[in-house]
Length: 372
Ligand SMILES: *Cc1c(COP(=O)(O)O)cnc(C)c1O
Image (cartoon, rainbow, N blue to C red; front, side, top):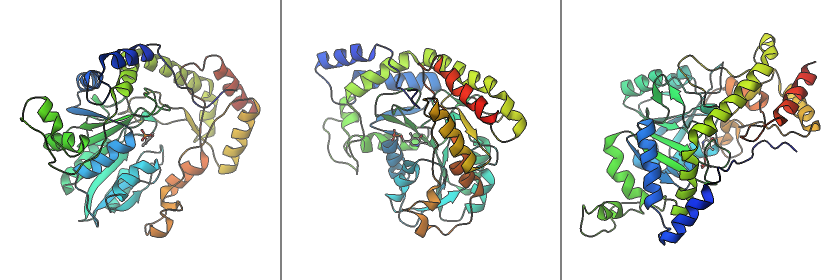
């Protein structure tokens, strides 16, 4: 069986977890958490990082920090994971779903522009497959209308827009270390705060609404309840696992990029048939988070999946349009989102993981066979 995903372990995870356990301090915000924060802040030029228990939690923190209130409008691509929307729905926001680009599933800047009103408080962009959205255009729209930008960078570790790391551009950004991402800790995530004005409050929300973090730095002589908050921080056991992965980031990325290019080269023949291969704009870097194909119809996609499954490999489709979901469809009053619907129906993701090895050829051969 060739699964869609298989979590890769570097071998150091259990060593570091043992170290964490032996220090006797296994709750959050300890030594391994600090090491992870420093790693990210130095390598990617993120202003301030806070590990969270998931990307979902980081997005919920973002919605709290932006002080989203009932009636505020937030623009979100319909082609994304539910958490991108739920974080704002939980605060009572009304969601304005935007369409994807014609050439890739990222949010269409024209669609965003058409949805801005005087109630728009934030735009959430998703760097799908780790490929950057058009951030200059998004940030300038946001500046013009006084709107915040949150990057859902769940899939976008070690990727860039021009010379800037993804996650360093929006006012806030959220990463995921779920076992399906490039760098993992089982469940896990991180909030990045790039706008100084959110720094202090982010730490308070993170520590259950207390100023415990500044107490530990010796800035205040006692800590107490100063704001709303929740328990967003992961334990040192999760941070220790994550740090082992981060030390192998370059190796993991090198491997994933070689797998990506092998798919791209082997499947180059699809290029002549239109529509199939991933499009990476000139301003974007490819972090090899996934390899997908966009078929010409839903039926073709389903047949292709069946064909590859017959060979023992497990490709999968991806998001269903959120504006047509059971939860949201009767609340949706916007127009058609044809590109989003097309990716929901026609996109297929191929098996992709560090240890894929020669099994990759099985997938490639099944696709070649299907297209004859
Ligand atoms: C994986 C993912 C999430 C959720 O991440 P968790 O860490 O599982 O909460 C959110 N948004 C996108 C785009 C994702 O790919």
